[in-house]
Image (tube, rainbow, N blue to C red):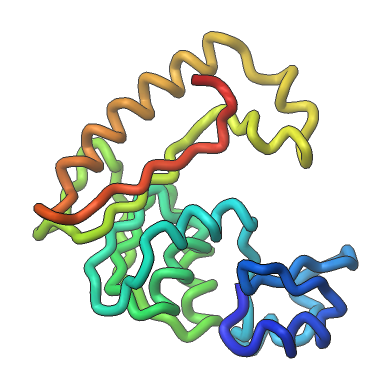
Length: 188
């Protein structure tokens, strides 16, 4: 995702400008070596994640709770568009990466280390984003081995966890607000 002019950055990065306003890179290599990375001009975000976050619509001034937030692509998306974001994740190391990304991008969000099943905001949010842990079978195009490494038992455990997390997330939504639930699993 681009902070500035996507068209200009597509040229600078020798990438393809997509209708979503994002740039798909044609080259491989360390992203930290690319122009604009250290200046916070852009961040890495899968197109599917970007599209899911864009379901929130206009977020200017809205309260947003981003659950399972690290490494922070959706948090950055919401913050860059004027949302008041609380980013929650239970992984301290992944939250450090989220913090570093926000700092590099010069964006702000309240960062909370917490378990979605236990933690609750002081006040319900207008938008709650839950990108729940999943089997990741929807990423098979990039990771074909995933189709052989996840078992039926894995999927059942993850589905139970997702239901519990979805119930918890629903408790965080303000009246008139909405919940965005996403996974990259192909199973029901």
